[in-house]
Image (cartoon, rainbow, N blue to C red):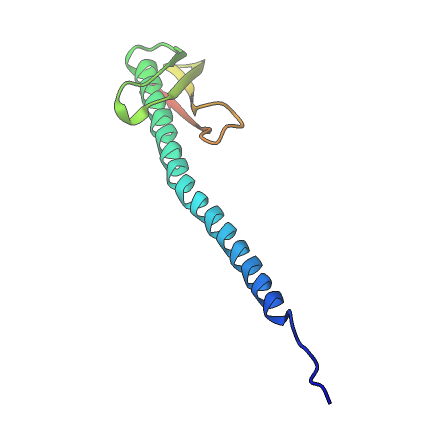
Length: 130
């Protein structure tokens, strides 16, 4: 009696292992990319938060100290707010003894749809009524 020849089984196992290792390698590359972009996106979110806060503080100062409702678009100075654009809008209503101001500050970095896009809006209501 002849023994049955079992050839090719090792090749099937080797190909299976290569496919599994290739899939794991691709997963690791994807995971590495996510870990690299997440801190950058967090930094961009922090930049626009402080840009919006700076715009809101400026708008409140204009409303209370200068008694005027002024809107503006500006780029904050400083290295920490690179690429941030701030737009401040203001509306006021007159009341007995003073005014009530609604100040809205919107900070944005980059354009909508890009990977480094971030936007933050803050609103405050203040009055100069004693």
